[in-house]
Length: 137
Image (cartoon, rainbow, N blue to C red; front, side, top):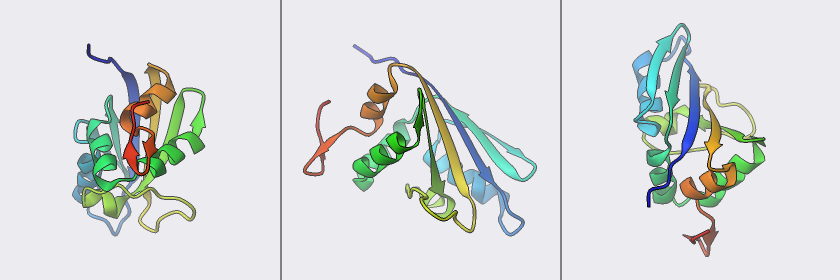
């Protein structure tokens, strides 16, 4: 049986005068390779419907608990938001931006889950862990 997810992901990242636009586009594409990305004046915008690669990166970097904390801390109804550091994303790594805004700006991500529930989707992309290892929810 295949699970079906209905998810809308909005991605935005500012482009500062000191930055090369293609590098900001690459940073977004590295984390969300299936996103439809458009360059607009002063920012990059993307839209996606899956977070499979993002989930793979969370598993590879072993930061599932950190991700779950960010997702649930920034939740409103069936939507969660988070911010990522551009430089890390350019290097195909996830580094959540917390506290003071990053000097280069951040990649802002808004995830709206229609199906299944938000909790089930978070369990899919960043499962709960025990002793640092993912466990079946």
